[in-house]
Structures are given as structure tokens and as C-alpha cells.
Image (cartoon, rainbow, N blue to C red; front, side):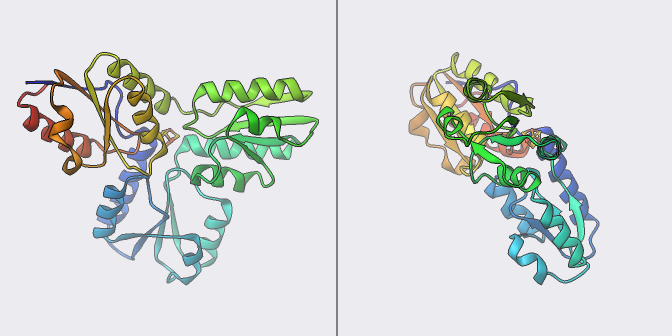
Length: 284
Ligand code: SF4
């Protein structure tokens, strides 16, 4: 008999809840076809269920081919400005589900660029959120490590914005490299608290249980990071759904902790917790 404990901060954040509620409202209202600009969130099960309800994910190359009047939902982690422009030119109705905190990063990057700063985006190169930020400050540099910061070209003034899911430790390392190299460094710390809170809660819980289960998309950077943080402390398995749970993994565990990434809705957490409770024979 094991006890299941869910982290006190786990699962869908404000921005994801908001995006899901917006798209749910659009689909429930009926009317013209609905598309999402790329996957709405990094969660394959949610994306598949939206598709079943009629909202297919399209890439930016497909926008021009969509019939005028169709509705296009912009994803929670943002897009480059050209996407909204192209959608408007194609006669699409745009529903902007970009998280307000991501929009804040866009505005900060835009302002720094307009004020003549060499813009640095601390984050993961290639991540859609970072691509969206770069679209608001063309020519900005992506820095994912202290080594990247050392490799930046010379500049008089450097302005920093941060991918919302970045760990504060990385930002600190990068800023200390920048301060050693550049005359003026202006930093907008745009890290979202939702990520930090989930990481800290996961670490606290992992330190007090025998095993951890982390729920969320394997393509979700913040969920994968939660799994890494937990795995550094205790045996951990990362699942997208209850069907991936392995009873052998739970054998010998008296307490099992559960956490979930910021793109994991509460329904997915409940399903996995119910399956875990059935496997271990006791709820929390
Ligand atoms: S993690 Fe933060 S910035 Fe990203 S979607 Fe959620 S609330 Fe918005």
C-alpha cells in the first residue's frame, strides 16, 4: 500500500488554461472552421482531442491556403508578428491565445531593439516561444549558455529578455558573463513564476517520496525539465497518460509523488492519479 501525493503546484498554468478556454469557447460557439497556429500547447493528447472537436493545427505555410472567414487561434507561447498580418490579409478571423506574459516579453524585446540595444534572448534556440520573440526583435541573439554569451559579437549596449520557462540560474550565469563584457547591460527578467513554482514544488516533493511520476507532453520543455529535476533526486517516470504507467516502477515505493507540467490540464492529472491509486490500492 503506497500513498500518492500530488505536488502543491502542478499542472496547467494561467496561460494554458486561458488558451484552452478560448479555443473551447470558439469551438462551442460553432460556425466557420477553426484552426490553431501550430499545436495550441505542447501536449499531444490535448492537441488530438482538439483535432477531434474540429480544430486542426496548421503551420504558417498553410495560412494563405485557408478559406477567408475561417478562424485561426494563435498558440499560447506566441507567434512572429507576420503570422497575424498574413492571417488578416487572408481574411481569417484571428483569435489570439498568446499568454499575456509572453506578450510582455515581445513588448520588452521590441522596446529594447527600438532603443538601440543589441537584444539578447536567453532561452532555447528553436523553441517556438523563442522564435516568436525573435520575430519581435529581428537580429536578436539567442543565448542558451554562458558559452553562448561569451561568443556574442561586440556591442556597446546589450538588452536582455528571457524565455518565460528559463531557470533563474541560467539567467544569472548569462548576465554575469554579459556584465564582464559589455559597457551597459539592461535586463528584463521575463521568467514566468508558474515554471519556477512548479519546479520548486516538484523538487520539495521529490525530496520526501520514494518515486515520482511526472505527467505531460514528452515534447514539452517545462515538463521534461520537471522530470529531470525529479530524476536527480529519486526514481522518476515521465508519462503522457495513465496507459504508460508501469506497475513494476511502483514496486517497493511507500510514497509516490506526482507532478505535471504547465501544459498538462487537470483532467490528465486526475486520470493518472486514479490509475496510480488503483495500482497501489490506496489514495492520498
Ligand atoms: S508558463 Fe507562464 S508564460 Fe508560459 S503560458 Fe504559462 S503562464 Fe504564460
